[in-house]
Length: 296
Image (cartoon, rainbow, N blue to C red; front, side, top):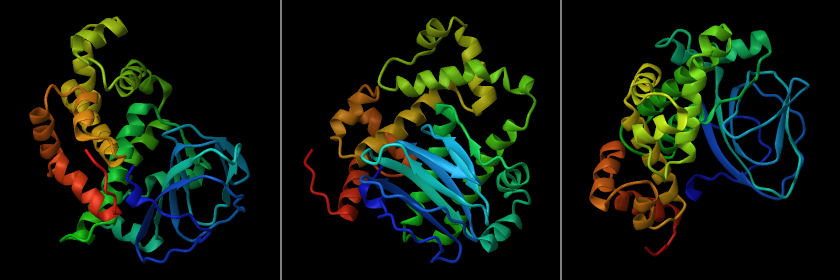
């Protein structure tokens, strides 16, 4: 995650912007936070740290990729198990007026928050594949939030809607019969394996050998569950991992080699097609925004 997107944490619980605010926090030397509530909707995406989340008097131990949904008026606070480890998360605030505005286009876009409120189900645990999908959409939203380009407000609304609709789909599956979710168990395991081995050979033959199923089954599962081929899915995950690695200051030559690209030309073309900018230009842009002067 880019340092220039990092927000210094403070205890403010009221929105300064009319529609939404999104924060990437990376904190050490953690200080206690008192229980609080607010008038806006909050989505909390946990990345890492020794933290539990207390919501409406219930304690939720957190794992990377977990989502917490906090409607207006619900008391909540973090509880730190170790105050010396780094605590990383993305927090999205959405005003009630803005959510109602988005509902004019997508009538049930507040489904996830209504479910959380009505069933008192505020915490959702995601496998690594699902978490990566949500992270990608949040990252797009975070980038646009800090952008000053043309059609900024329209794109912000699009990225917010895309994230919430994806989140609605995931949350709705928690309410589905277990029989509906069982066929995804193996698929989720394959996604977990992919995200843990992005730097290795991830051909269909390798995946089939590791999971004792045919490569045709794997290809069909990805097309059915993700709407893309296995190759496209793996490529997208490698590109997003590459993007994060570039933002962390890794030299481009290492990024290219680390994520399975045979040469820089292949990496260059794939990165530019996915993000509309070359790896070099993306890195230079990040450095200029953050004032970094890293060497290749």
